[in-house]
Image (tube, rainbow, N blue to C red; front, side, top):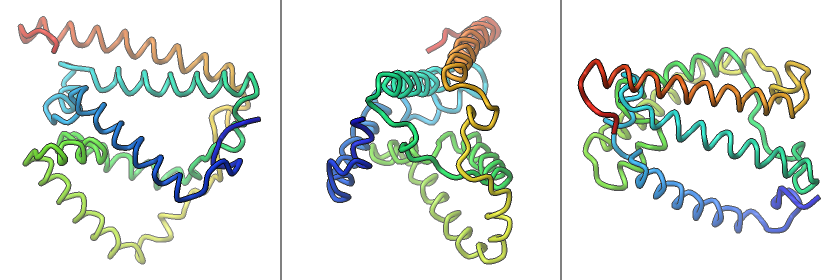
Length: 201
């Protein structure tokens, strides 16, 4: 077994931070090159006029999932050592709803807003300012909502463990779901293009 490299002490925490920084910069450049630093492109997925975000992000998820799964099959990666965030179901659902609402209103998610900020976009500056303000408000409110924040604790949960299914079957089902999502996205884009008389970007 050779990976995850950090868990097997191939490098220390300082080196891991440098690696994370380099990967983060590369990821930001890729997002900007893909047009993800523009709020109009990001928000257009909610109007089914440009589903680029869904296609790219779903492709990234499926690619990473297939890569990790097959690397584990050949014995290169120990999936049990891959870090997973612990699940607090209801607080996460509420947080996801609030984040999604902010995405719809502002046209950015936290990551893409930083990409747009790096290129000097004014709307991104306002969005990031609002995000920082929200963090400060959350910090002030936290003592009053701490019990809710820690509620619904489920430990570390994965789809295979929760539904008692094999990893291979879950991988196959997610790939089918991705194909279905891509097909629906293409259909939605064509319908909206026909309705508005505009071509999909």
